[in-house]
Length: 174
Image (spheres, rainbow, N blue to C red):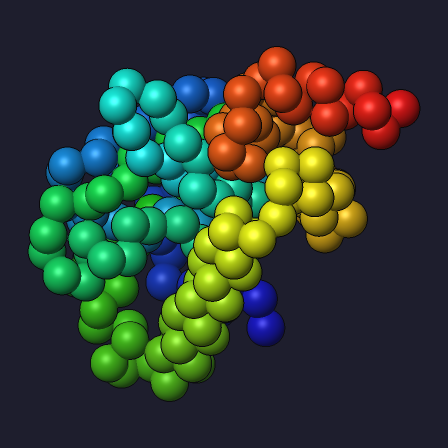
């Protein structure tokens, strides 16, 4: 069962947002989990005035600054829509209650945490051992939808390179 089916009985608020809508600012405390019905969101950090994208989220995925949501500490991340998006919104209290009371939801959440851990581990290792060309090739192979839907400057920040470098890499591929 996917997460959208799992949360369907809870009659959550549906939120439609245009592209470039900030759902959580870095430094604020997360109070919501967003479930993506349609559209695309990104998670990013600010490093010396530069936006560094850490992850993209598409339909059927959940997004939140989990560390902030669970700890009550300010978020290290900003959450933003890239495309016009439709989301279900669950507040922190309901989210925590469901983890305690709904075994299927708890199992989904545990799976989400493991998936995120594995994702970030692989992403970090890629940064440490691969050259930008290799990171781009890996992205192309594993997540071609990103290249079709995401603006080039966000892809570049995700890969840890400039837009100019990404253009050169893409031109080499042609």
